[in-house]
Amino acid sequence: MKTKIRVLIAALLVLIVACVSTPESGKQAFIMISPGEEASMGKQAFGEILQKEKESTDTRLVAITKRVGERLAVNTTMPDLEWEFKLFESDQMNAFALPGGKTAAYTGLLKVCGNEAALAAVMGHEIAHVTARHGAQRMTQQQAISVGMQMATGLAGPGREMILGALGVGVQYGIQLPFSRGNEAEADQIGLVYMARAGYDPNEAVRFWTRFSQMKQGAQPPEFLSTHPADATRIANLKRHLPKALAEYKNAKTQYGLGETFAQK
Ligand SMILES: [Zn+2]
Image 1 (cartoon, rainbow, N blue to C red):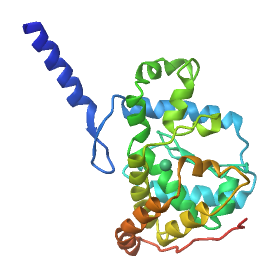
Image 2 (cartoon, protein in one colour; image 1 turned 90 degrees about the vertical axis):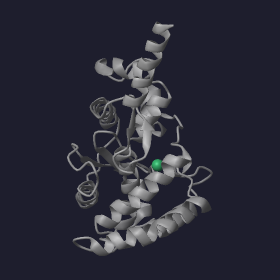
Image 3 (cartoon, protein in one colour; image 1 turned 120 degrees about the vertical axis):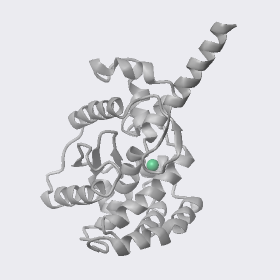
């Protein structure tokens, strides 16, 4: 009997230790992976993606992506991550941010963004998945931890796809693994605040998502839309959080408005 109780107490302790509040929203989440482990997985995944993707040689757009990313990063709860912002040459309308701070956008996405503020809306959303630790939550849920522990040898082995999917870069590898609706709504809400603090007009987020959702790319919706449906609920959620974001925008050090514009498709 005593042993049973001891086991129970031990189990409870594990639960308490693993139930952490996420740095951004303060929400309680069950996470059984440390920020360090999470970051090292993110870096490994990024290394793999870098080998596969072609970096853009458009110096102006590369500079814009870096600038938007850096303005967002300093306004997050994790300004000290080893942030890096790349632009990949591809028609993919997509962007991602990995735990540890490695972030990338695709030139196809920039074409539909058309301006810095819209790009900030998308990147802010992606970065919010990182600061709210959604990837780690998902890895915990999927019990990928044991697989994650084997990652010292790289992203090889049977858990590879699951890890990449959990980190939010599954689409690049043909795995559709959208974050939950709750995680998506949270990333939208946090991302909106990030873009506003960075000095970009948050009104553009609503305009961009509306514009983006109306886009048709042949029979296939853009990659980003396949995991981020910009439906009426999403737009309404963004609109609901706009007043708070606008207050942040008013207090931003510099207001860039839409920022620089660039070619739109
Ligand atoms: Zn998302």
